[in-house]
Image (cartoon, rainbow, N blue to C red; front, top):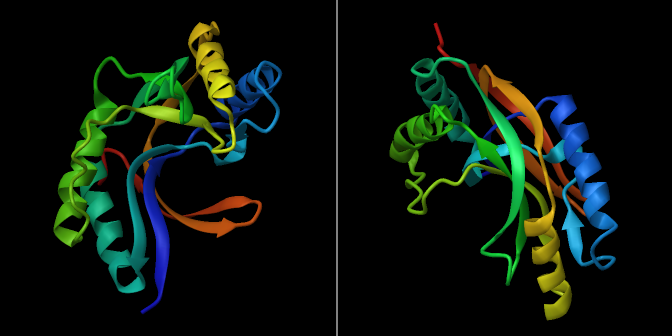
Length: 195
């Protein structure tokens, strides 16, 4: 059976992506060369649910599930600001920008997605949802001191608000892994507050 590698996400606007790219350029100058694999700004998105290998015959069901999930959530906005590392700054693996969503709409949207796709064979995520945008991943070849330096730079850098995103759709995206990095194609968009 043919499968697609897919995930469900919120797309970002060009202005925020440009600002994220400028932040990456600034960080690149402060850490050891090739210690972080930076995400291309055009590829940065807010993942709500990674589905992984998705059988082609489930695509229509997933699209219907996303339409149901998005229908109950009205359009909203969130802002991107601040920076940190997962799991922590002493042993960073991922460098991220945080998201501010005081009304909790992102969590409600993610929860609605989980409820709708779970019956299709995609178990609900057990980890708590921490909305963030991944800027880069620390390379395995980075030394301990390089990793500590990355964590220090990420936690000590002053990062104001990088942009505000108006969310009006939920995206179902296909990911094709290429040697140059993942290539994303939007398969379906479900409008928030649906018909």
